[in-house]
Image (cartoon, rainbow, N blue to C red):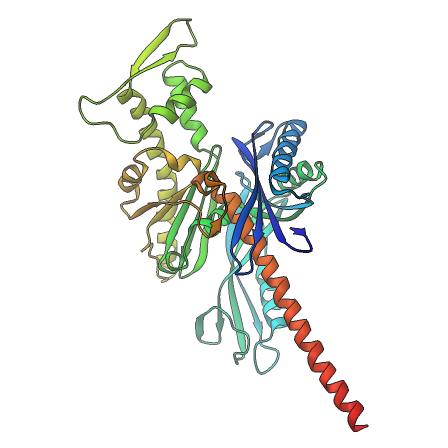
Length: 418
């Protein structure tokens, strides 16, 4: 967040396996976000969320921030930072307390959430997010906001997201070496969900899958609340590696082949193209049929999506045993750079047998057209988190101003009477 006299600015920073992206957004009077600054840089020194060369990744972060500052004409002092690596875990927990007064207060809410998160988490992990799913008061369940309701006992179900402490510390350290503070570390899957999912989709049940370069982040929402989240440490880069290995070519050449000719569905008979490429074992160019390339890509995408489908089935069985409803009526929402491969919808339908939507981020404006592509769902989601912080600050200011007005009126009354 950047405090400015005449502008409310918020900054998102995504440090991914393939790219580092900095976005500067202005929160407008109608609470929408206008993108005013954008900086990107190819990633070096990080793989699947793990830093392997601190100096290299710091240099990338600094370059990305500098570009965004120049475009936005501002100095970036703090950022909302996304996090995605295989050391991120999630678990659902329950907290319960007696209601202290006749009705539920804000203090009761804080106490019951504190109880819910005071549980054993994986060794050397820290909690990133505590997300209330629903509250229950006595026999009434499914409550979203219990403040003001009467009862004897209150229960909360929460979704905890944790990460290994060192993974979090290292990525924060890299950002702070650029003389920038971290406002909040946010699980990338949550950020992407905020950028591409609608309220109706979350209420009806949906699985969001963000296919990045090094990781796949996915979240499951049912009845408006997150029920599950996970990171799979394989994504778009492994597809490129498969191409490189299968056709004995460089990673760079394989990536270009994937982008130019890649698909998850074979072309119609007789329409397969010839692809010229360089063989790493000789100096002579070689040619392959597009069919052969697509076969490699399709098989790996099916395998990656099947990893998510296996988790969906596992959660479905788990909730069924508890007698809880489990439906993904809104189907599957795909996003991230890896979702741009041609005919991915057809491929995903084979795996999930559900409605598929490939999503781009929404509820943002600005003249930078490319940032509304699915590559940038995570970093745009970070801006929405920053926007909510501004909204909460404004709300507290209004409440404080209202109380000051009341006290002033009481004080004036006392002066008149006495």
